Length: 414
Image (tube, rainbow, N blue to C red):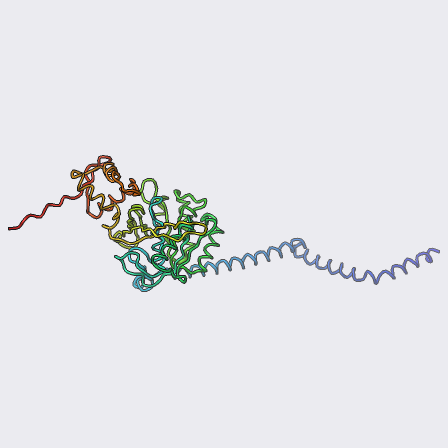
């Protein structure tokens, strides 16, 4: 009975044996590997960690090798900018002037003056002359060739548009292949890295050789021009925008004009040249170089602002009066008011006159419709006449008196 009951169990075990053969084999293999690793003193978990560490070390070594290769390439690139003695003058290109003392290739410059002093007149005049390859003043040479110019009118673009229209009406067409006007609807922010990157790409697509940025105050963004960090950011952004082109920015002077343009000294240190505009458009402008890294300061340039009448705009009836710049000699600056000042000094003030006395005398007998002379106009005329050697002063401050030089009458000869 016991043997008959045990027989099915044996038979059932036998039937199940083939199904578990594979499992048994795997277990045996695993057991063997485990025994081998155990005999070597490494557990399966430790082996997996070791494999992970090995792959991580290989990846780090590969990345390190790539960084070192990239650094070597950068160093070799920098090595190209080191020149041994005896080869420097041949290997390194000299500064190439378009107009000696004023405009050159790969240059960063500033045109500075107080508000409403005519600095945008000067910037636009320089830009148009460069695009046409013409001289910026009769006393200077022509540009060697037309220069590709981009004028960025960030401030009052419609005013710039009217001045260009007046120039084309009075002087001649501006070449379309070498002059481009950028008149944005919203100002650029030099503190916004993405905006600077986008604008730099736009500028590069036109391949300008000379860029005018009018005005710097309109594009500073969040940069503080009176701080070192702020001006460093401004200069870096300007360098990124210009690439290898020359760039002149129009900038304001501070309340004390004797201290030059606004901003940290870091800004002044970064520019190659500062051109200061003096006078007022009503009586004449003088432009002189007050700082230059590249050359001895050239002679000052003098200009008059003449009025051109443009046809009425759409919906308007009257013509529009727009100023354009015309070069002049120093004596000509203030010529509209200068002769009257000289006549008044010679006839009514043989002992000299204060500015108030001159103003009162000039406005005493105005002709019908004649505009009254203002203090700024008189001041500009007096400055121009003094520079030209036509008048001199005595006293200081409010007591300053202006004199017309005495000319000794010619004596008879026997």
